Structures are given as structure tokens and as C-alpha cells.
Image (cartoon, rainbow, N blue to C red; front, top):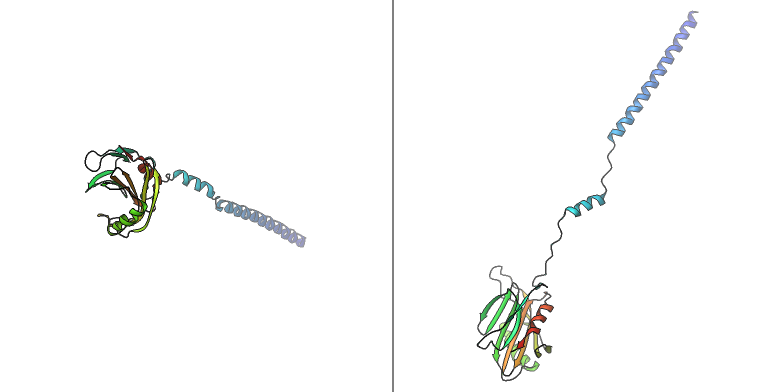
Length: 222
């Protein structure tokens, strides 16, 4: 009987130990799952959403013209000289540009661009040959790094004119000390012993084809 009682006690203790172990294992598993869940990393915000918000918050790009470009909305006003050699014609010039008188020339300037008007007496109409023989050698002594001269005859509203194109360095800016490489268009208009030279200049890379055409086409004798 004693043996049977001890056997029963052993069986009972074994069952209790097994039940306790099962409970402990279940609790550990639950805590592990809970810990893993609480430590999981939240999902990252999609890159497309971040980019979209950045584009909404960033300012619009600023429009700007290349150096020397005359704005498309530039207004023009007629210039009609009265008296002296600079008379008997009209030509449109950009509104608001600074005007100076330099000897026998009237000059309109704005930033890097210039319109120069010079009137002289002439015994005959300029030609491609006469400009090549007389004007180009003169300009070589006046324009720093004068280069790439080309003479041709073109048609404007005033009629046939001689066009001389060339390049040269601008005068040094008194403030910045910078020198700009300029492109020049020199139109020679002539009538009855009077010649008017219209010279348009600006930086080589500037796109001023339309403004220069507006000005040169506007020239008219009165």
C-alpha cells in the first residue's frame, strides 16, 4: 500500500509540473509576439508623396532673359532729330533707353545694348566696295579686337542699304571692369548727299534679331 501511495504521489507531481511548464511556455510565446508587434517599424512614406509635397511647396522658377536680350515686350518710340546734320529722317528707338550726344552722333543705350545714329554728308551713295575700302580700315583703328567684317547689300523699308556686320570688344565697365564681346550691325542709308549710319550693337550671344529688324526697318526719310 505504501508503494502504491508513493507512486500516486509521483504521478500527481509529474502532472502538476507538466501543467506548469505548459502555462509558462504559453505566456512566454504571448509576450514574445506582443514584443515583436510593438517593436515593428512603421511603413515608410512613399517617395512619390514626399516629392509631390516638395513640388507644391517650392516656388515657381523665375523667368530671365539671357544677357543682352531685349525683351519681346519692348516698346519703341519715333526719334525725329531737328536741326543740324541729324535731321530729315525718323527712326524708332527703344522707349526708356538713355540718350547721349557724342560729337556728331546720338546714342541710345540700355545695359549691354546700343543704338548709335550718325549723319554725315556724302558725295555718293555707299556701296559694298566703298564700305570695304574706307569704313573697315577706319573701324580697325577704333574698335578693340575688331574682327569678322562682312559687307552686303540688304533691303529695308527705306530701300536698298549697305550692311556691315562685325565684332569687337566693348569698353571696360567702369564699375565691374568687365569687357563684353559685341556683335555690330551698321546700316548705311543714303539720299541726296546725306548719309545716315545706324549702328546696332549688343553681346554676341544675345538674340536681338527681331528688335534690330524693327529699328532698321523703321528708318524713313522725311
